[in-house]
Length: 553
Image 1 (cartoon, rainbow, N blue to C red):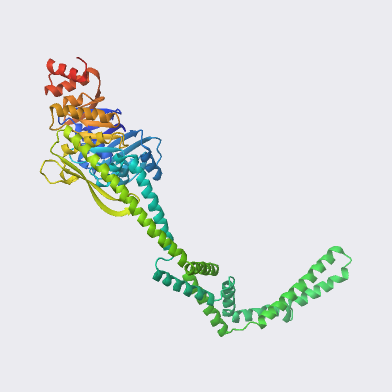
Image 2: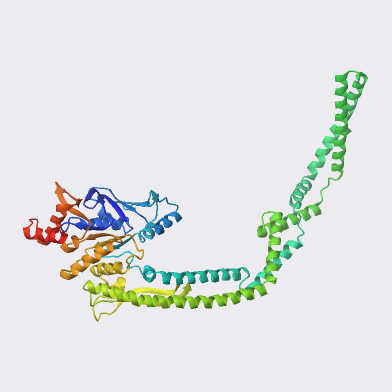
């Protein structure tokens, strides 16, 4: 429910925090004092379209903060899905500047307008002069009817959802097997082609690196041959070659082998001599095998192009290509052995579709039975509220079977006897909508609806016994749901749990509105002003107000 609302530079309000109770909250004050501005501010923070005309004159930015506590599990789950922390309290902050820039935050986390509206549609019903959040949204009508139907409908919905889930899973399995026969044939042809193309390449995991190295070697064979000749000249072939020098040096030292350190050096020179000889022999072999062969170079180049072409189709490396081939082989084997499995799945799909249709029909019948009861109860409530010429109908239209059944539901309404019945949002006026929502709330008591309901002048155009009925219904609803209501009817106002007086004051060239919580005698006096219609209270009006409050017998 709404715990508090803080307005900053919003229309006539400079800075104001208003606290609300968990029962029946009544906004009192003269016309033009700013009661509707508070409702506009609440509507703004709930996600209504922004209007920079509400930015207080002379200011550049307005802000509204709404604090909601006792948040439902449904709302907490929504926030959890958005990774927004919530400990049972929601703080919504919304700003708007004169240049049209705005910010939206929930518990300090930036959100979009759509996200905000998704959340607040579960938190509050707002019924004012021009719009109604929840009741006018056709997408909510089926949910409202199902909630009215209670456990029986919810149980049948679970049956339908379970069958729909099974059907979805079966369709997924059929799709994984290639769909219909022609689709499977096309897939098998493609898989066979891909497997053959990879197999015919006779790939080896290590060959690409070897081929690249060989390609580079042949491409550089002329330079390699010349360089090896120069190196061999220095090592073994030249007049002052390295091997001869090493041999002479180690031979010279052999005369002093009795000296340990000299003998160790001789051994090292001897090892070096044999190592150099071995290197020279290897290089000689390489030199003899070094020959530019354009045909081999062409063959290697073609092989590398083939590997490159396959890698573009089937995987970055040869290992990836071979893994893809194995995957294709398994898939082909599945398709070739899937005929029997597919036949079973298609039979299962057909039977499940029949079962789903049957259970959806049962759900539809339950809903239609529930709808007749719902219509009668709504009409009875509207009759109490002096709307006896009205008609309310729950209209059904079939749709494709889903997890929620096979029904589209829409609330239809006619305000006057003989008038064509139309979509609720197309025909009901602001006052009618208010009383409709009041009727809905009484019929839906305890059906887990939103926690806050806003009524803007629900008593407009009524008096006498009807006003008393409205008051009774508001009191009844406030036992289950928080109510915020603007009223000019004394009997309605007197039943509130909390009274908030809105006043307007001109200071110099500025006009400012303020809101004050009233208790005791001050609340009775304000209701007496509604009776008197004057700033000066008469004894008669005050006595009448006290009677409404039950303060005197």
